[in-house]
Each structure stands twice: as structure tokens, then as C-alpha cells.
Length: 212
Image (cartoon, rainbow, N blue to C red; front, side):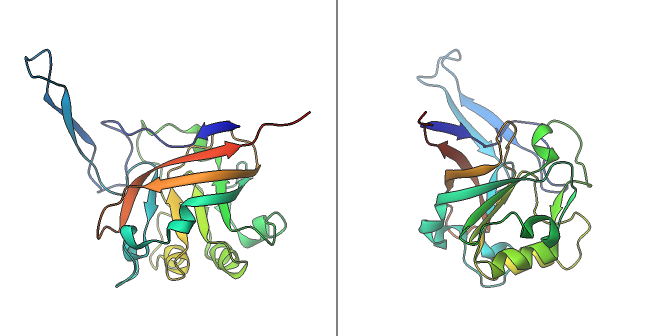
């Protein structure tokens, strides 16, 4: 089988959500400095890079990251390539999504953009009618390669609330560059941070060997 890492690396000065603070990676012990080992510490927001949103992020009293259904961290996922579309609507995905789909990852033009520049507020997003459609069809995991499923200038945060109120797992900040549309197995492992509204995650796709 082929394992495809779709996680964004974390590094200093990487692009983060405006106002979320930057990444600090600090070497606290060095062998060259006559310490017995190299040791480091890191300071990041829990919604940095590839990460998972817990219901608590937008739902008062919602589940925190350590309370999520562990059955959602692995399974079968459908990767949908939205091309150059910047608005993912119900109409765009209604004819693509299979009835038995429980997890979907959206590959947009953002997968080609490294997190090294200024924040682009016109990133592709999931529209409210698409979010409602996904919940109606029984999808339990929604992933996207942008840093948010929601439009930047959203005021009511309808998309987040629609998904998180139904305890749909949201995975943001994926990197699906080079990944073709289709079905895969996935593993999504958010850090187990007690009481947190989100957590950085390592996410991989698993593609079985093709038998000729």
C-alpha cells in the first residue's frame, strides 16, 4: 500500500490565521553547547497548520478535542477536487458525493500554495448550503486544504456551527497537492489536548496497491 502524508509542516514564520500569533520553536538544550542532549520547546496556536476543530471551538459547552468520537479518526474518505472554484456549493458537490460517503476532503487550488507568504483572505471556502447538504447525507468528517472551511468575512460562522453542532469532525489546513480525486483510507490523529477547542494533527491517506 502507499501512504501519502497530507500534513502541512510547522515552522517559524509560517502563514497563520490573522491574530492567532506566530510559531516559536526554541532550542532549549544543545549538545554543541555542552548539554547532554538536544531539546526544544514549541509555542503555537491549536489551529495552526493542519489541525482539527472540536465542537467547543464554536459551540458553547460542546465537546473538546479529547472528547471526540475516536471512531472518526480513521476510515474511508472521498477526495473531491474542486479545481479553481473558490466557493464550494451544494450544486458543485451534490452530483459527486456518493450516498455512503462518511468522510470527504476537499482539494482546492490552495493545496498549491505554501504557507510562507501573507494571508490570502480570498481562499476557497465551503458555503452554508454545502455544509447543510453534507450533514443531510450523513457525512461525519469534513476536511479542506485551506486554513478554514468558512469564508473569511463570515459574521455568523454558519458553516462551522452547522457542522460542529452535529459533531462533524472538521479538519483544516490539509495539503492535497499531487493527490488525485477518489477514495482512500485515512488516518487523522489530533494531539490529545485535554479541554482544548482544537489541536494540530498528522493526517495521512492510504492507497491500496493496484493489482494489474
